[in-house]
Image 1 (cartoon, one colour):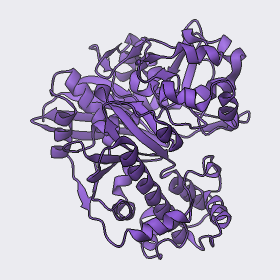
Image 2 (tube, one colour; image 1 turned 120 degrees about the vertical axis):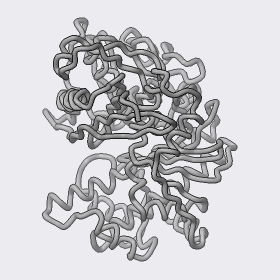
Image 3 (cartoon, one colour; image 1 turned 180 degrees about the vertical axis):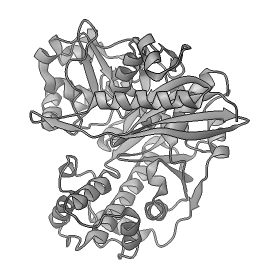
Length: 485
């Protein structure tokens, strides 16, 4: 490995980390230098992100990366849809609101009265999710927006604090439901119809562009004397994660599995058919102009929130033990729709899962292991539906499923996904978003060359991957799917 390092700031919905990647001789090596919690804060009845706490974690991480030496650039990725508003002096107007806050309840349906879902989809190609940026802005209302001069999505806000330069990275902009996916621009028409001021949206920029250099005060904060460039990466963490899918060829599906799970295929053009809208598939922009044709699935949030609930009640909540015990619970004892809206907000997840089972006429899980098995079976069913729908709607055949992100360490989930999808699952890398972030920076710095296939070859050569072959009778999964319709 060389001494040249690339700092990937990778912010997830439950934690953030700063990871240094070194790239040389067709391989990349990652070193985590700082990890910090991402804990929302409820104040005045509204759920907020602790954005200053996250920024502190970023600065601490960059300082640690600087101590490691040889730092060439930094890049930031995070979750999508949430934003900060800035006033005319560039100051933040209030803490960004968390997408799980209840302020958007019912707003999506009201918005359809102004712009029908079919028209929104024809322009944006975006999945109808109640917390999309457009519905957050409609919920905020004209008075709140009147004081704003600029809207920055979370990674763009942090980048602005680091560099003093504003912009809107395209992979994240495409998740707002205010971006014209075919024209590759903001949709001023949609903004006008919804009374959202067009002027608050900054110019678009693309992965590989420059986001500026660290401000002098930031350089002093991280104890660096030389300028440090910030490179625009796929700032939606899924866009960066898909860069790091170690696929060969195009006949693959991916599952980026963390707090959320994103299940889809990579395409050259969006699919905006009536069937795709009915299936609630999204067309988000990927790195190098690709389209992430995918469906959001609630993901490991169900497990994370269950563990939090058990911990709060003093119950044993060791994940490894629970997964071991869950593997011995009979399959399909109880299954639910993991995308049930009742499971979105924080709260007593095991109780809500039990209630969802009862609503479907199934006996609820009787213990913690049974609850975990219900979550695992239900997620695998949702992944199966996502892969099959992606094939059907896009015309792209799927020979293998690549499962990347934190969920790739969950052996039970990986095996169940292979069984459900009836194709092999290749698990890994774990830190896919950070890897994709690093590789886009390295390409911008001319340390690596080529397109996505070349970057993925670097990932495959650098990662420990595990392959899961499908087992059992797939007809059992078809029968189980009928129970949650």
